[in-house]
Amino acid sequence: MAPETNLTAMDGPAQRLSGVQAAIARAARHAGRNPQDVTLIAVSKTHGADAILPVIAAGQRHFGENRVQEAQAKWPALKAQAPDVVLHLIGALQSNKAEDAVRLFDVIHALDREKLAAALSAAIKKLGRTPQLFVQVNTGEEPQKAGIAPNEAVAFVTSCREVHGLSISGLMCIPPEDEEPAMHFALLAKLARQAGVAGLSMGMSGDFETAIALGATHVRIGTAIFGARGKVAER
Ligand SMILES: *Cc1c(COP(=O)(O)O)cnc(C)c1O
Image 1 (spheres, rainbow, N blue to C red):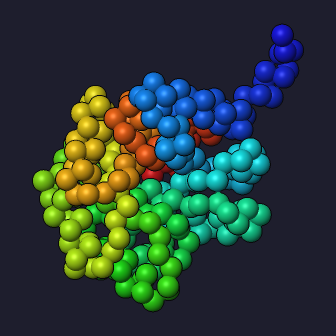
Image 2 (cartoon, rainbow, N blue to C red):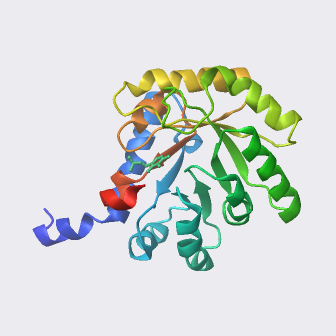
């Protein structure tokens, strides 16, 4: 038995990371899937370098942030220490920040409207840098939430390709907090098949096992790795 002091020391982000990795692998095998087909994005929004560095040291390479400005302040220094980090933008993106986002991020999960598609296309051409793009779908059709409506999603992916010359890697959703997430994940998977995209960015700390059972290729996990975030800093 480990002494109690060690148990406390073990309860840091790096230890929680390995617990999450094990849970992802279990969920994948249970669904008859290869655990390597599920990318874990460690969502480090609101957390500083002191929390992030141990997770990098533990081998984690995919990280998610929801605000361009916060990521600009944190990640250049962290990336200097770990140049192979893959940075994901998982939050809403304003068109006038498209260039900043294309410069810093390797994957953008929140493409949800024509104006942003045009801005990203222009930024990609100008900077010669091509992040992977996910189209966010508002599967719960919540007025306050970003994302394209489900019945417009397939046509929007086509428009991204044909009008804006963008390559789309997959779809992303955030289910409503008060609903069973499974039906939202199943809807996103169905839309992805119809749109002909392979990626499914779905599943957070509370529901990633369900998301993996329904085909998630990218799970975005913050709290289960880094612990609770301050309420004020959250949005
Ligand atoms: C914050 C956030 C997450 C992580 O949520 P947790 O419940 O802390 O795992 C995932 N996706 C998006 C879009 C987020 O903003």
